[in-house]
Image (cartoon, rainbow, N blue to C red; front, side):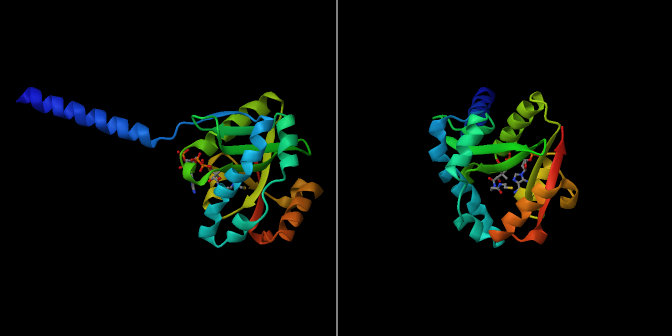
Length: 194
Ligand SMILES: CC(C)(COP(=O)(O)OP(=O)(O)OC[C@H]1O[C@@H](n2cnc3c(N)ncnc32)[C@H](O)[C@@H]1OP(=O)(O)O)[C@@H](O)C(=O)NCCC(=O)NCCS
């Protein structure tokens, strides 16, 4: 009887373990290839769907990153791709030099993979590489109070900095964003020291 109970418990434990591991998406992070570029629009579109939940649906309907920009980031080895078991992109992160800082141009994780550690893994790969390249700081512009923007980046070690203290090129980015309808007062510049 006791043996039967133990066997049932062991089976139940194995089942829980299996269903838990089935729920966890497997992914890897690698450098971008030119064949990835055309697949990133779908990832970015899917990622931005979440903005509809905070009345920023225009971002989900708006333009995605220009493929020539993505290709340039890839050529510079500054485009990282998260892929599923079939090597298909499920997320990406790209950035470039801006006044000596490594400036994050975009990070997007497809909707069904959000909140599973993919964004963090992309961020860690980028940080590790740009640190080796000699960068001492990473910057970005984002929505201060959107949970998966300002608060998410704060969790990743970024702090808000005064846009005025960052110089003309950062102010120009905020102005350019304003032209696309991104409310200047809600946007901020954030920085992470390496
Ligand atoms: C921002 C984004 C890339 C984050 O990627 P992600 O894969 O969802 O994030 P992760 O699962 O790696 O999150 C890492 C940590 O942040 C936490 N987190 C995830 N989503 C969060 C949210 N909405 N609010 C607060 N914390 C969050 C996780 O719990 C995790 O915490 P832990 O390290 O303590 O376990 C993703 O949400 C996304 O694509 N959003 C839409 C596009 C976007 O806004 N990009 C940024 C433009 S500036």
